[in-house]
Length: 67
Ligand SMILES: [Zn+2]
Image (cartoon, rainbow, N blue to C red; front, side, top):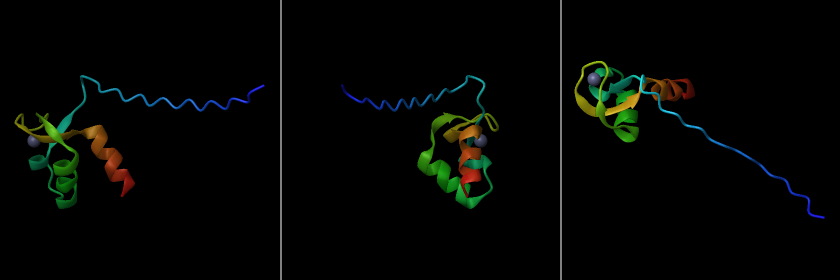
């Protein structure tokens, strides 16, 4: 008999089409800008409408709460 401990960890990262993106130029905070420059991808910003290094707002708030 085999004792099988199955740890099933499914990470479900879903990106909604309605996600808001914010680019580094729309961020005033120096430290958050750095986060976007590091983690962001080129995407259309939901605030200024330009294609820039951006992250989703959801993603950003996760970062903030971590601080
Ligand atoms: Zn922007």
